[in-house]
Image 1 (tube, rainbow, N blue to C red):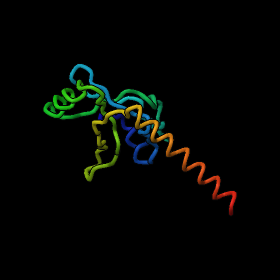
Image 2: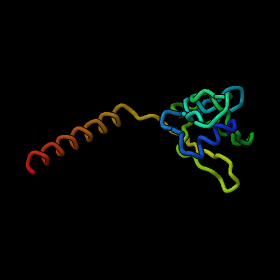
Image 3: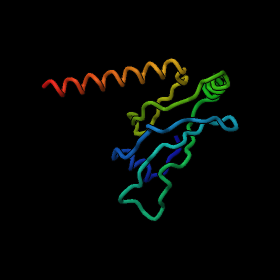
Image 4: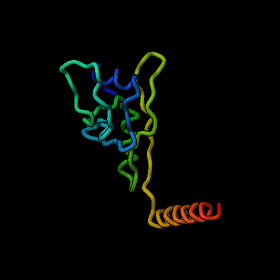
Length: 126
């Protein structure tokens, strides 16, 4: 991933969030969007935007493989883990994912409602 110096320091301080982040392919390159890296408190006047688009560095073979898979129906690339390597580099694990089908969403909503109702009943009978 291509980052500035203040972004690295902010990540080391733990001021990063990838919950809403997703990846896109543009011109044969992989970009991560909507990843939040807070401004470094002790930074200089060079302040980068917290949710700017950042380029991910992958090998050409990996890029071609991901591009081929994302063209298929319903696949998207999502980041699921951000970590520091032994050499001090920021690395990000990405995964190919599919969206939920309508019946899956209904089942999840039903389970959430059932759990909420059970919690209310437990609270009443305590």
